[in-house]
Structure formats: structure tokens, C-alpha cells
Length: 119
Length: 367
Image (cartoon, rainbow over all chains, first blue to last red; front, side, top):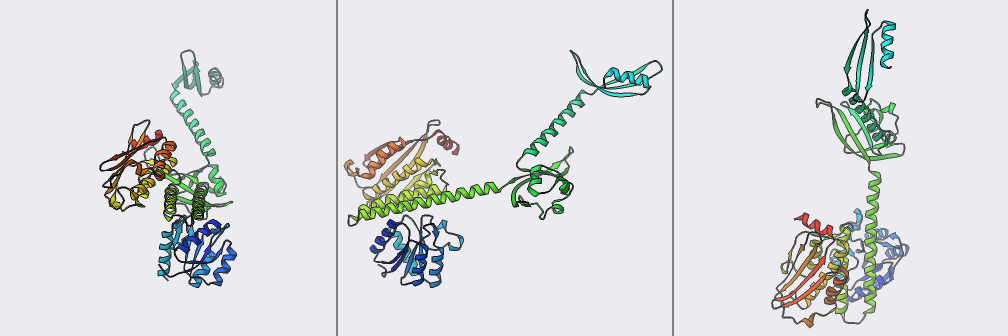
């Protein structure tokens, strides 16, 4: 198993947040913080204190690209988790690691390994 | 002027008179060109039959009226230009689109009255309501002797179509996004429910969910208009085995939505079973899937799933949820007949699905 990671989860579906917590825990990682609103997510991103972030593209009607901007500026790796898949990303964000919902634990493990190896 | 009036005038005024006379009787219906010349003895009259010319004129008038009515009411832009690109005719829709009067554009080239010239297939005009883009089809206009005398063009406003297409793409994306989120939520609920239970249970459930999700991806890619059986089989089988262990024999066949989703689920279950007990397990040789369409009018799709080299199976071994799903759900949902045979060389299953008539016809056309 890769080294334990502290994860920020930005997701507005409570059940999906819980699922991510469980999947991450099974992989030996810890969810440090969760946010379901954009402002909250921005504050958490700016405060830092985690190794990677998982972002739903759209939380409560707002796109999370501003959060991605903050993370990019801070050099924190992140992955988009979205029903749209990578094809749904705007041009500027193409190539960002993306998990298409729904996904299995193995998919999550793969994308995290890829994220951490590229840091 | 009537015939008799004409003749009397020629005599009384001593002047030649020319007139056209429509002669109608029980046996005749013709047009005459009549020339009456007064002489000392009376009148010399020449008649010439001009019926054909009159009919041609009538037809030309009718055609001109028709052309005028069509170009006047057409929502698209209709225009004609001469060889120097000067506007020789334009319909009201064009004048409205460019915000110019006919007097302003008549006999002028685009560059003389518009801010942008127009040569490309898609062209824009800036009118009173801003810039609009049209699809223009242009063709040379030819005289009777085939020499090009100008240009004729028809342009269609693309704004509405583009907007509708964008709207549709957006809706499909949104629909897919919501669906995927819902599937993730279902996965989350199952995860909570099965906390601490046998991980194999959860895995099997999640794999079913992923297969359903993959089938929806295919549908989204095809704008929910249906999906080809080849793509469906590819996606289902690839998730379970390396290509060498799967054989697909495949005439092209587009499937409608309901059939596609039910078959995707069934194929997933077949693969799962094969991986667990049959030919895709460690004993392995291969699985082949082929299909054929029978019947022209009431088409039926016959799928044959054959496993080779798996361990010997007894019927009771495959009565799990997957088998029940393949046999019962398919039978009910698609009115298909499912048959399973435990042959010495491996399991063989046949699924016979009735196809809507147009799908069967498509298949015939595709050969």
C-alpha cells in the first residue's frame, strides 16, 4: 500500500461523501475535511493541511474550478470525481486526473497512485 | 378590342389595325394575330395562329408568379447575382436579414452595401439584430446556351439549429451526470448496508452497477439514440477478460435503448458467471459470442454464448442471481427466450430476442 494520505473531499451528496470516506479508509487513507459548498471548499483549500483533494465538478449548482485553481497554485494534487467523465471537462482542465462516477475502490487506488507518483 | 370593332375602325379611319383575338367555338379554341388593311375595295385581313406563343407566355407569367410567391414567403434567403457579383434579385427574407432596402442592394455587390463580403459556405451578415450566420449554397446561373450569366444562392439561418443542437447536447450531458451521481449514491447506500459483510457480496454488486454505468456511457456517446451490439459486447467482455479469451462474431446491429440496457446487464452476468465457474476461470480456454438476425419482417436476434474448456459443470451450480437475471429478467423485459445447455465441452446459452421490424430491416440493409 502507498503511504497514508490526508484527503480533502469536496462533494455535495452526503451518501457519496460517506462512500468516499469508506473507500479511502480501505486504502489506508484519511479524510481530513469535507465540504459541500463552494465557499467552505475554498476556505479549506486555502487553509491546507492535506496531501490531495477529490473534487466533485459541481456542488450545489456551483462549479468547483475556483477550488482547483487554489489547489493548483499551492501545488496540491487533486482529482475530479464527476458523472461527466473527462470528456465533460472544459478545455483548460483537460488532462486533469478524473474519476467517472460511479467508480470502484481499485479505480480510486489507481488514480491516487498516479497522482502521487507525478508529484 | 373585339374583331368586329377592329375591322370597323380600320375602314372608318382608313388605317391598318393589329389585334389579338381569342377565337372560341365548339370546335376551336385558339389565339389569332389579326392584321386588317383597308383597301379601295374594302379590307384585306391576315390571320396567324399564335396559340402556342400565348400559352408559353401564360406559363411564363405563372412561373414568375410562383417564383415570386416562393421567394417572398421562404424563411431562407434567396438571391441572384450577375457575373460581377451584383445583386439582381433578393427576396424579402434577405432584405430583412441584412437590414437593407431593395433599392440599396439592387445592382450592387455585397461589399458596396455590407460591411463584410460573402464567399464562404457559412457566411455572416450584420443586420439590425446583430450578427447572424447563414449556410449558403451557391450555384452558377446559366443562360439557354449554357454560359454562366451569374450566381444563384439560397441561405439558411443557422442560429436556431445551432441553439437547438447545443441545448440537446447540454441536456444529454446533464442527464448522464445526474444518472452517474445517482448510481454513485446507490453504491454508497449499498456500502453502508454491507459494512462488515462479505466483501465479495459488495464487489459483485458494484460490478453490476459499473456494467450498467458503462452501458449508459455508450448510450450517451450515441446521444441516446441506441447503441450497436458490437460496442455493447466489446464493453461488457473487455471488462472481464483479455481479448484472446473472447471471440466475437459480429454482423453490425444497432439496438434500441431498452434492448441495449437489458442485454448489457445479461452480458455482464454471463461474463461474471464464466469468470467464477466457467471458461474464464483459472481453467480457461475461451468464450465465444456470436449473433445473427433471422427473419426479414419479424426479425429475431439470436445470440449464442459458448464456453470452451471450463470445468465440467452441473446445472445446480449456476442458479445464482446472475443466472436468474439472464433467464427471467431477459425473458420478461425483452420477451426473449433463453436456453442453457450443459454440453461436455462447456456451457452454451442461447438468447433469442425479438427485434422491432425496422431494426431487422436495418440489419438486412447492412449486409
